[in-house]
Length: 405
Image 1 (tube, one colour):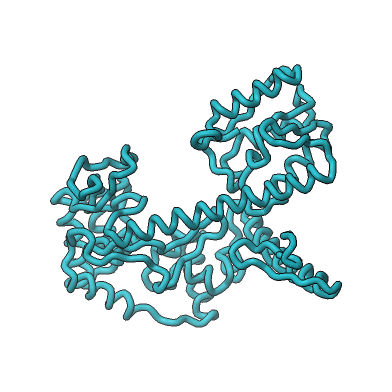
Image 2 (cartoon, rainbow, N blue to C red):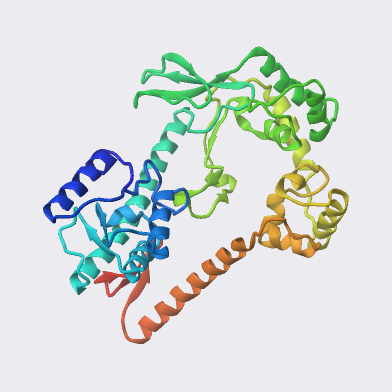
């Protein structure tokens, strides 16, 4: 079970499952409930993991699992994933029965086809919902409202009603209680505003580097908005974030459907300029931007490897954070982009992380295999005289405009 609105609330699901069990003379001996968890991935779904573990290890003291409907396994973007979980339960001698479906899960062809369709529909529901939510977020951004995330150092989140009238200030972790309310950014405490402006003056006027500014603030026992010491990365974030000149910028990074996290190019950014009161002079912000751009350069692969090797020699270890703390070398994201991953870059200088990151390469290989397998499937279908096309939004194959795969 999981938590969603209306018919998918845990209480409603539990009631439907209990009624189904009573009609069939079954006794519920254990409930596996992932309350309020996303069904897009297995991550964080401890109850589902526990169910699979109990069944495959032989610890389960039951022979039937009652599931509300097919989508409760998860709204996975790969429909085969939920089918796999049902398969391994069945292989262990545990049958699956769906309490709110209009078919019997009896292994018949009709049941198999219906389940396949419903699994694909569950994933499609998430895709459609994601697109609608994103469109709504973009509209609100263009109206000047804040979408998600903390305000950041020197700023605060202000709640306003549907007419734009100020209400309460939101503390960290607090959320709006009315759907019609909106959130905007407002200047924070005076001491934080002065610190932000001081960071810009130190960088632009005095020519201090980010790491030097961080050391100076830490020596004065000043902390970030998260109560942590300043670092080169946090100073750099203050110097580059347009919210300090009042611009509302959204969609810098995409992580849609919890698939691949990507940094978006400038033309994909959604923005509303002058949405909030600026706490930094625009000329000072532009000057900082010019300095940062001027020191950027295009490194060759050999130069990047040499810089990474020298950093490894000095630090004795490597990580994205360690790399980003050095002004005179490319960022960790630059290494990921150039060499495919940080792990690959580490290998070039002979460094092996303490924890096993091999799963990253495995995931990359699986993605490559999936693309290759789909291409081979399309070619094979066409060789047999059928028409096939791949839907760009869903990656589903439409065959003869009759069914999808």
